[in-house]
Image (cartoon, rainbow, N blue to C red; front, side):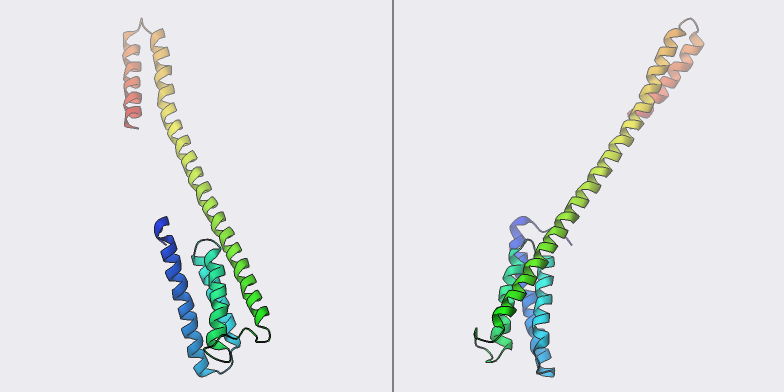
Length: 180
């Protein structure tokens, strides 16, 4: 998934939350035409809350979608239909259960996202350290060769052929170092 700019993140999260809750509502409405029971409604909305918690940032959208889902279930899918009825037996338990599930899922997803971000940063740091080690090795090897050959050529000043040979090796090592 592409990285969304922070300024636009809340709009993305809002639109995603609205779209998933709308899809859950439409799906439950379609299923209600097939089956008059309503046991699936809460499960579909819990799935919607879990999906929203997974694909949005932070706890807010999970909790928001949980409260909105409970209100939608109460308003659209419980008798009397298209009216709020907070006196339904078990409604407070349903509300608390969906809110608790939402908070747990949001907390787990937030933790998973943090761990993933930490893992990516750790991998990036490991790659960086390996690259620096490799570059350091690639630079040190010709440098050591250059220094060593300079020391040897200093000792061979009375042999111009040996000095030329070491200067040639120094040039090759220097050109290699320059190419790095």
